[in-house]
Amino acid sequence: MEDCSEDEMRLNKSTSQKRQRTSTESEEKKKRTGTLLDLNATDCPVCFDSLTIPIFQCENGHIACSSCWGKLSQKCATCSLTMASRNRALERILELLTVPCPNAGCSEAVPYAYSTYAETSTHVKHCAYTHRPCPFSSCDFICFFKDLYEHRVAAKHCESSDMFECGTPMFIPLSGGKGIILKEETTEGEGEVVVVEWFDMPDGRMFYACCIGPGTDEFSYQLKLSLASGKHLSSESKLERVREVSNELPGGSVMFVPSSTCPAYMFFITIKRGDLLGS
Image (cartoon, rainbow, N blue to C red; front, top):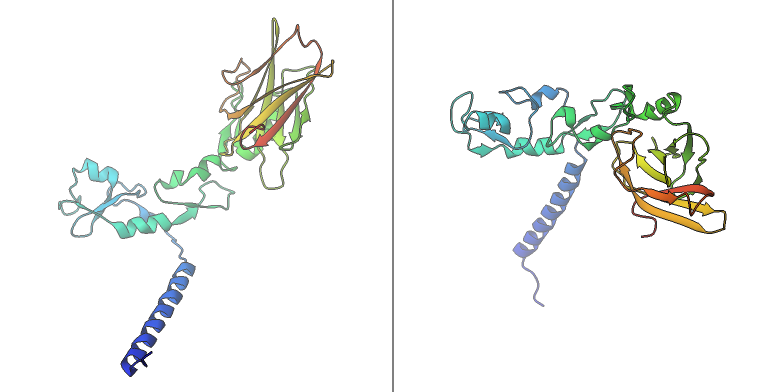
């Protein structure tokens, strides 16, 4: 193998140093953070609402939100030039920008991009500090979502209440009342709230369960009847999220128990995060 010339050695050394510097700079860029102290800087200069992507600009650099851009027939409100370009740099800044959750009491930082500050992300819709109306249709009480369970218990929207642990069967007493409120027992923050209802029909009883929290997690549940004969009946379904509990017969999945075939039984429910228990 021929020895490298002095020029080749210098070139190889320079290339190696450049690669090392580029790698170091890339790592440093990842560590860079910034703070935007005035959110008015992200307002559209035409309508003064929060900027959303896409953002348009004219040749002079004047910008407008997509809504104003359409209303102005793509003409700049400042200089009347055609706004034919996107401001990609500012769009990128909005993609990386995070802002405090607008709900008082919440310390979460949420993404700014693709929405207005009032609706910064799905976090705001499901935040425990978002004000929520009571889902029971006969009640107009409003409070933080995290306080709704205590309100429902105090208001006696159901005859009884209890805590449940995901994956663990729970006995539901059927004597007295038409339903029970269950709250998930968890150490990781606010747990989900589930309502189990039953409706007496002329020829049997109908059972139904729903989740009344604003979260995004999916749940499944199993209803199980232990009969006096020692046999069991069970039904599995996805736990639906609802905005309102009307104390009327539901339109979703239910379990019907004929009174003629099951005159005496014990009732259990098992709630699980994720897909159906049998899958």
